[in-house]
Image (cartoon, rainbow, N blue to C red; front, side, top):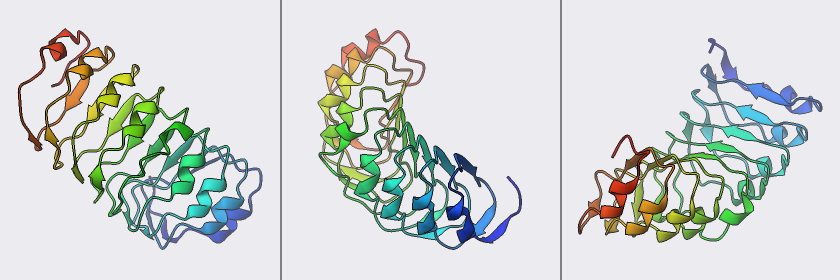
Length: 214
């Protein structure tokens, strides 16, 4: 939260003991340095809310100790590297409010066993919501708002016993709201507005005693 501008300096990738790097909310431009992949001890990387462009480098998937990766609110394009789904220590992944175009992978979710927060809203993501998201047993927040997602709401979401916040509004999702979602007892926020859903509202949702926003 300063007024730093210009490209991110490449030398930051030569700090072998660096564990925490937060450049959030500046006026940084340019691309994400590939040299970040050299930061083998990095646990927290946040370069959100800048004016970065280009792709998310696939090389970031080699930072095996990474717990937090935030690149939200930039001008990033391209696709989300599948290498990021190999980061077994990752707890928070935020790439919302960019211009990423991606058919979300269908079979990599179980490789993110520690993921608790996934912010993917306000991009150009398309295709069906992957069933693998139901494998993320520690997931607490899932935000897919304002993309171009199609298909139906996965019944596997019912497996997310720790889910607190689920937002899949403003997409092109059709079909019914699965009654199985009534088993997510921790759910406090549930939004499916601005879709093409049909059918009735499941009675099971009214058993969610923690629910505050529907």
